[in-house]
Amino acid sequence: MTTLHAQSSATIDAPADEIYRLMADYRTGHPRILPGRVFRDLTVEEGGYGAGTVIRFTTHVGGKDIPSRMIVTEPEPGRVLVETDTAPGSTFATTFTVTPVADRRAEVEIKTEWQARGGIAGLMERLFYPMGMRHLYRQELAQIATVVAEPVPAAVPA
Image 1 (cartoon, helix red, strand yellow):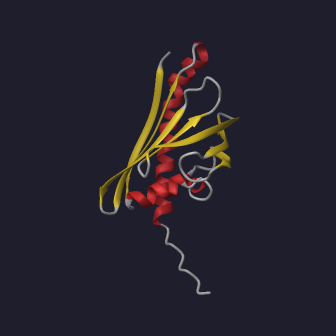
Image 2 (cartoon, rainbow, N blue to C red):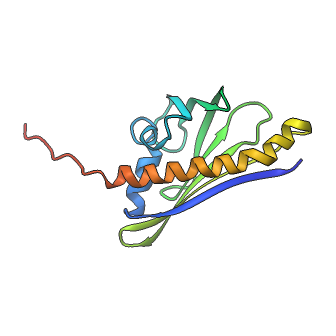
Image 3 (tube, rainbow, N blue to C red):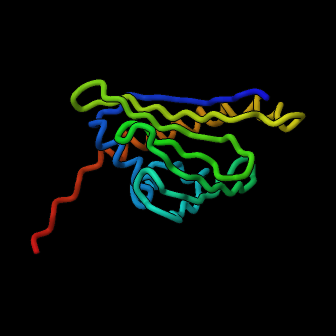
């Protein structure tokens, strides 16, 4: 089988720890960075922050809705999140890596790897999935930059 991968990265003007917290928060942060035309109905089944979180969502691609269920791990807490598909036999895994490059800047990479299927379906995967996913990840990176640039609301006195 052929291992396929799609990745995109961007330098974002925000502290690495702030970006990581946004991505690791699957209840309120992560849903805000997903392109809504493609990712729908993100639901947290277990956990909600970082390692041990289990999520469900639907991906709308090519006119089809594809349900997914992922478990989150943190091989390098505070720097690397990995979402791994829980479907039997699936090798699909997406890694989010945040690397500080300056005091208030970070390099953010989103990368997915999986084993291509055989036959015509596998040929279509090899031809179209990596390009489409890179486009989607560029949108997600832009959304991360937008969300972290939003002003934090002031606390209301009690």
